[in-house]
Image (cartoon, rainbow, N blue to C red; front, side):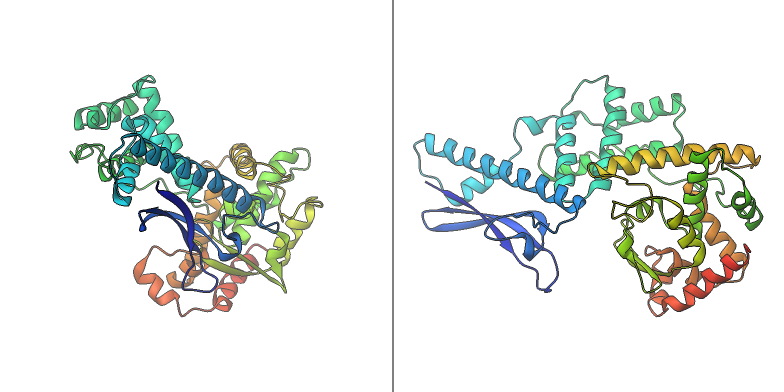
Length: 400
């Protein structure tokens, strides 16, 4: 009878993440199944482990991954049991082929998309999983809960879905967001052999429209800073989070949420962008310290009052993001601003104001952690953080 072993292949880099793979052995012939599940050496001791020093987010990832690996192994064992019952010779290759063949559960598109969401989570790609989940909810509403085979996804259906979104007043960029996510899942279904490629998205819009300018001038930042919101503590919190983002070169709200007190050392705030993994270092200025000190975060490892307790940190971040943006809109109404105020405006404002101060585009890109502008990135690699800190100080000084 064939056997299944869970194996770990370490990275060539000492501190890099290795990958988990499955080994199927039958009649002394071994075959491997790649998984794409990535862990570090410290998280493997002949089996997947959750080290006690893991943070809550990593612990959640490893726990979900352990469940996924257990499910995969159980499915492999069911495949082997099925082949054994046939009372006919089989090989390790037969086990691998049967395992990789889509199951009946995967043969419907909505169910397959749900499995892709689970897979993304197990790979630690929570952002993609969330995007797929949002898209799935929209598509399920369009389908009125009715599932369909992957082969039923054609250009007529997708065009009808786009038309429905337009009727509902969904903007083109949001519609395009849904289409791109559906297309990614559809292409995955094609690669798994669930349907031939029919290019059903060729007639719908999958680009990105230029959005209305989100930046506000320095004079507006000064007005926001000067507001007396002592009688509206939630608006005051929203304002402070907005300013903290602006002070820190347009740091995204998700990066702010997961900042830990230990990220500030020796007058430097260092963190990795969750979107790109890029390490950024920012001089810790007095205005930043004042906001951090203003709120009671004692008893938590986090720097700001966004994630305030153990548990589902991502849900806390999302709830806080919704609340802060809601209160920022009220602040915009107070100030009679021509554009809605959101956390994203702080990021745009920093870049816009930096440009108005004749700070080179390359320095601005470095300061904001951009890594998707190839021409700029080549030049940015040679910049040190002192140049960017000088640029940030110039902007903050203009507020005084």
